[in-house]
Image: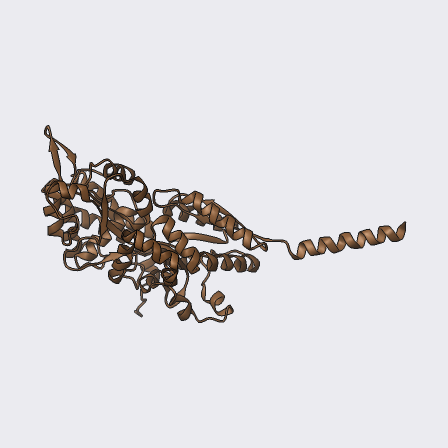
Length: 438
């Protein structure tokens, strides 16, 4: 009997040891849903697939709201000593995370796989490198990315005698087309020619695209304490936007939130809108009229800011969790998964090899609108990234919103925005200023 008990105990101990040896590493991932659509449900399904094919890792995906909300929740988790192992973070937040020492460099993981950082980054579109690498070191792996696009109702174009295959290319074209497309009935506007989103984040992104197309630089990509709000190029940009509202009257006064803009487009009350390529699937599934997408109209040059998010590994995780996080990141950014996510959402796939897959070629053949953002990548620049990024971005957005509502002039808007941004960045400027000897 004692011998049987000993055998049972040994077997039990062996099973316990084996169970411990093969216990899955549990990690969590924070993810935002910054555009409309069923992205949250699809992400949960994606993580379920990963878990089923990686029995040694158990990932819990937590939806954390918008990009800005995900930033707040990630910082709070790090401060509480419970950081997520992975976070899908707005790509332009990486500069601030690096300044605050809250993010792990990716280079060591890449090198441990026997690959050089340059070779690793070369699998992604060149336009994405600026927000992924800081001072030559990789801090974020591109996951889903975007450019702003012009969406336009081709039925409305035909109605007013415009060629639906010839969207506005320049600012002047945009004004001319918007005038024709704006419809009045009984003294009221029943269809606006053009609408931009006034919601925080996408408003700043849209203004940055217009400013760059007007020859502006918007911010210093090499120094986190410098933005260019009070400049001739920004004055020209805001004057153009202000004129669309108050001079040409082809755009509604006040702040049009993104959902209201989308509904106006779906309902035929807005003929042209600016939105992310990340909204492409959402618009494709909800727009009843015929539509097409095009580049953002230019003044002096074609130019847009890259948008979207990167996968990061926040500081404070154990080596085991970091290793599991890296496995998840590589899987999510592989050509196959990157392509699947692109086709579902409308974001373009950051991994170039995704477009070599037969299913991606067939998709682009069926949906040529998904190729426009890729073509626009030739003119894409890094996304606004500074110290105190969100507040500095809002310093401009607040003034643009006030201008849209007729409360300030473009001249007042850029001066106030610059002054407020400079105050917000002053701690960083002071900390990095060269101390000259007396």
